[in-house]
Image (tube, rainbow, N blue to C red):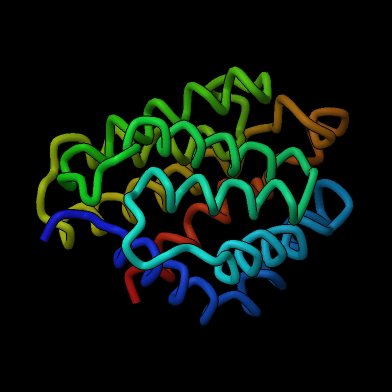
Length: 201
């Protein structure tokens, strides 16, 4: 089965189930680099998307646009803005389409990555959510089986998180204490890993 609205809603359901643990872990990770509120922000965003009223017969573009609006209304944080930007970017590419082939997901994530970079000013290698998203996009590019897509995405996200753990953050608040950020996970990258893991449960 190709990717459709049911997959998006099912993914949100599974993330919601894991959200209490994810929120605490992201807050703890952010406390080492910032204000310690990334988990709370992420929980508001996911909650808002989950509560968004989206007709069951909506196409993918309309569904993602609704999620993006819910995200923007829930938070004005930098990470929240990037999440909304990513969803709007993919929404434009899937407008009017009820489903897409799984093999299209990688290129769509690449477009989202580029839009997030342009909006937030980060580049690959800065130790941000972009690095995790880039790794996932490249790992799943061309894959057509959903189980294989998930396995490859999870492996890429985890490997990237581990690879960047001992690097300094080069952008955002953490950049002011770059050396202190070495040895700690970036909350945005960690969020990508936990979301992918939750979706696969």
